[in-house]
Image (cartoon, rainbow, N blue to C red; front, side, top):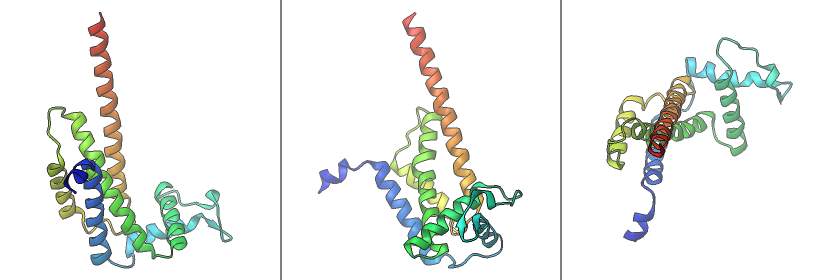
Length: 177
């Protein structure tokens, strides 16, 4: 059993653990309906409906943007198809998003920016514990804040990876001269 567990990648194990902890917490402790801003963000997804059918052209709310309401509409359709509530689908996808940020994106960004840093599973779990302490009450709602944080980290990760690739190609070019 021990050798089998050693073959499982740490990133996958941490991802499943973190997503499971978040999903458990959100399903137990979070609200089962949306309030105020969260409810208005969720209702924006309904603006993609025209005469009972989906239509990209029927959305006419320019102030709130397009991506989050479209995301919410897709989540609502998935929740209806699977037979779970709106808040449940938001909580489950929120747990997957935070696990993606905390286990995949930020550690890779840290490794790209600080090549000498030891970013092992213990530090990844410690970082996720901090995320849990400070963000635990915000991921059960359809808010754009966390998704923007994830997109920013992904963009930074992509930029740093491109920069690292450029640096390596310059080093290899100079080695050939």
